[in-house]
Length: 197
Ligand code: ADP
Ligand code: 5GP
Image (tube, rainbow, N blue to C red; front, side, top):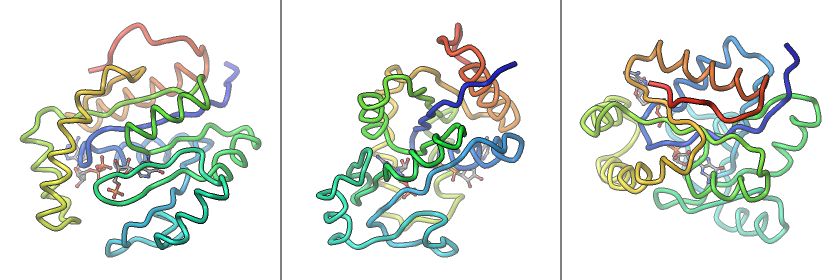
């Protein structure tokens, strides 16, 4: 069936499993490109500049905002993060679907610029499981975990603004639901009839 490249946004609380799901889906879906955002956050152990993020200074971020280089940007968990227009435009021009792993403010702003963008929201099965995953990941300090859990409540309240909600309880089921949503929007374009669970 013919596929139309789409711009996908994937959001959800930190620790819900967005990164895990996207990397599993991309193993099978090779023309789904993930953009590299710019951030003022410091790299975590193992993160590579230009691969995980473009790690830039506050001054450089401000310069790029003023130069109009961002499709969207936002303050998230105490740092600035943004999607560079160049990251999206080049990939879409090559006929690839693009996936932006960004927060809800970013999602809402992308929808204003690209009304056809598809907004997908990943939720954990419970608040307790979210906390367990965030701690289990072991990548943030205690105060960062507390901030992310606090922000999760605000983010969860916005989930109904998204086109599709996927509950990441069983990883296999959630990967299947994400793949099905991507296939659906690339091949038919219309809204899905149900919320996956
Ligand atoms: P996010 O990108 O949303 O911040 P991650 O993909 O980093 O979240 O996942 C957070 C942690 O939860 C990781 O340690 C990951 O291995 C784990 N995880 C992701 N999905 C599941 C799942 N369905 N069941 C159990 N653990 C999961
Ligand atoms: P992390 O610090 O865990 O890598 O990401 C923290 C949060 O920043 C996540 O919710 C992620 O979706 C969001 N984020 C990452 N890149 C961008 C971006 O380019 N724009 C926006 N608005 N949010 C982003």
